[in-house]
Length: 436
View 1 (tube, rainbow, N blue to C red):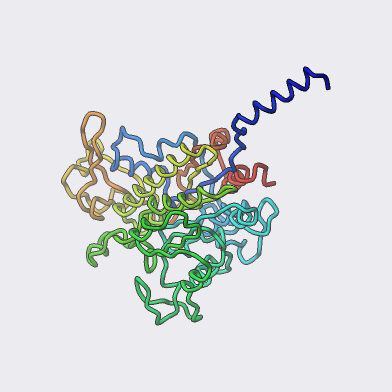
View 2: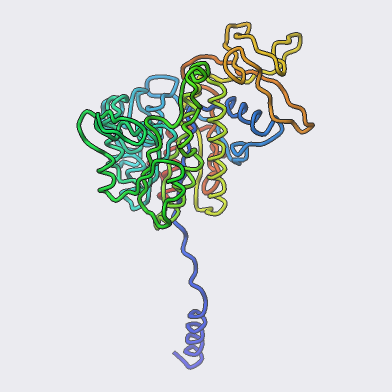
């Protein structure tokens, strides 16, 4: 090397020593949010009540969308446990499946012997599960638990506590404790004598039971487990029953899905190799399945607040994909406004109990009560409307996949997505390659 080359090389090294190191690509994160049972019309009802017909909800502001197809291996309408299993494994299964295909074990689309959450944990990523329902709810539990029977609630709760996730926030205390053991919210129901709360403490989890305790979790906590209700954090009964028993839609001491999600993200954001967060608002489904329109709308407003939390996180952390969908449409909720020639939907006036075709009509307090009133439109006018129900069951309604952040444009590019494609885009984003 000549003197000029040596000088240039030495100068370059000296300059490099004073320059900041080039930032390495940050590991990818995925947030999958599942407002169960909430189709496009249900989101329309949330828009009417919360921001008015000319307003835009947090859900509306998600920039990418595609039509969702959620049929099962053996039927046209998705189920909560079959749909969750398909999302978690990327394999279309029988409707009556919980982390299995019926009773048969399955591999993920990637070939891994376990769900995308189990594979994320095996690859060093952190995983969080958040649910406004109980810990056994399949929208989150099917990502870490497999069982032949969906109603094996004690078994599912046990499997969830063995999953190794960094964060778990939900309800369902009764299935953590042995029968005869008093908990924070009521008596346990386990028949095997096992105290899962003691096990979780032995595993090093910080346990919290109220929204105040959740808000006070110390900075730096890495393993967090919340149990916020005896069963679900909501009372999923019809309006008349809730009024008769003087019960609110949601347990007052429990955090909302937005508060739980924000707490989970505070911990998961510190994951050195990225994270997967699976969150579910279960009230959107359960209130729809009892045709409780006020409850379903409140659940939807709560779900929309959680989407706001996720959108803000993605803005600050663009290495994150946030996507949302549901596997079916609970009750077939539809918004009905006044119609020409008929004066049955008027402000301050009780609705008829049924429409001309026999469909139940819900108002602010239940069937046949005062019509809902929208938030003001751009001209300041508020509009009366009713909620009509098609059924008590789940239907294959008009459902969208929506998203924002890393790789979210692939949702719009697809235009239509099968339920197995939810797994595909999560896997592609988390691991940087195709699943199979």
